[in-house]
Image 1 (cartoon, rainbow, N blue to C red):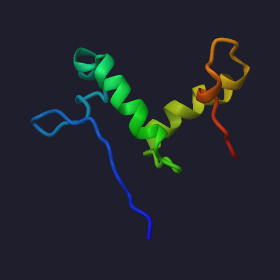
Image 2 (image 1 turned 30 degrees about the vertical axis):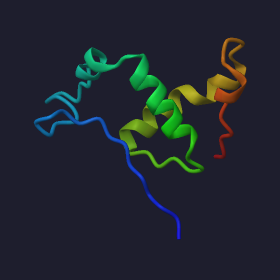
Image 3 (image 1 turned 90 degrees about the horizontal axis):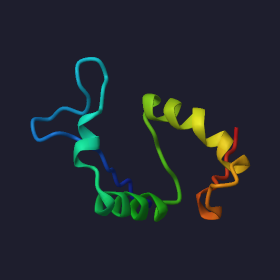
Length: 81
């Protein structure tokens, strides 16, 4: 049986986003160590489950990554539609 492991950015008072859906508070906390942690966490998974809003955000950007000359090879996703 496979495991489902989650990572979620939640404030100490239990909020994920502000009243208008903003998540700008993450930018205040995000640093290189957090970036390395998230990259390693996501890279170790064989499947990524996203919520609707996150998926829509990713879906708008990822199809363009393979065409980007500045994208690193290992960052280029294998997308199936």
